[in-house]
Figure 1 (cartoon, rainbow, N blue to C red):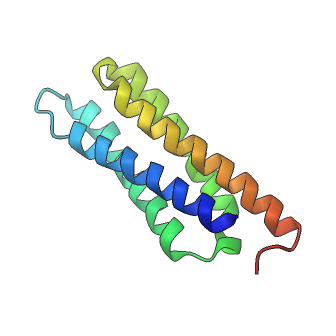
Figure 2: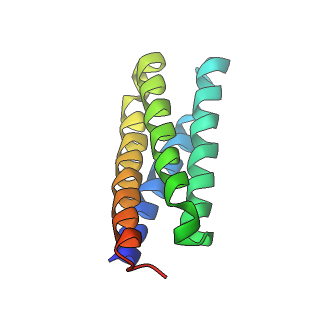
Length: 115
């Protein structure tokens, strides 16, 4: 169960990161807008590394926090860069997947299903 959910979440995180990085090449962005996209890209990159490299039990709480951070960044992007609403939706999809994964992993961990 967990591996399938991790892979599905990883796919959403990678898709969001690609969309963010592509959007950040727009020369019409203000420095503040570019900074928001850079923050989102760094957060997505950090999360991608955690999903690939970290021990599940050690980062359940951290990925839940990462999902909340992505939700915040998605909202900030929607509010400040209306033209990038689609990018914010990719970030929100990744954040939702991360939140669901964190909940599933926490439940599995509590039930002794993770080693």
